[in-house]
Image 1 (tube, rainbow, N blue to C red):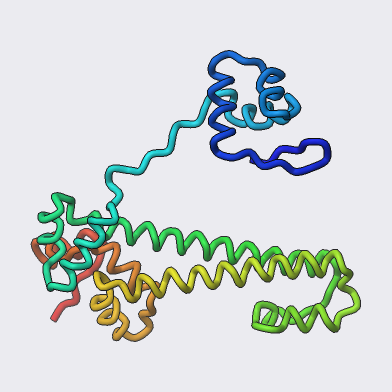
Image 2: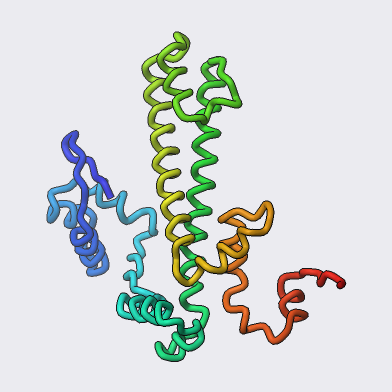
Length: 238
């Protein structure tokens, strides 16, 4: 939360925000709270108004989330050759817990990809709005936008700054997305199955990871028929 005070940006810490909510809950007015923090009452109102004056619930770690010690136990179990179900019994956890956390990582990767696509569309929109001619096939290739900014006289300083900001954001998202995919590919719990799936023509790392994480532990299926019914597959007749 950033507040404006006498023309300067002032960021409230988590502790200050908690104190503001406590004072508000205790019945203090906006003016009283503002004086206590040396802020105008309108700034305090900006913090309270979006939530309708209702304090946010305290964030708590989900009981389903794995602790650091449990993650270490899982790594040791995988290294020793134990199955997922054996590790789960040792931790007194559901066998799907470890897979669930990796699914969360893949969902976050998918979110980054959507944001990346939106930012690329924004770059194209800015160029079209300014009437700048560009090569659609090369626009998002490395170095092309830099070349365009340096040689095209129709791009003014304001537009150039926006385009650079968008491109930097795309690059940052790409690096994060690549790091997440690499971490999943190298995950000892998934690596063997992902590599096996990628031997199938046209199956890449994302398809393989998505399938492995959707299937979870194959031992939970009593037969190939149940497996096919669960994922709406057709058995190939021999």
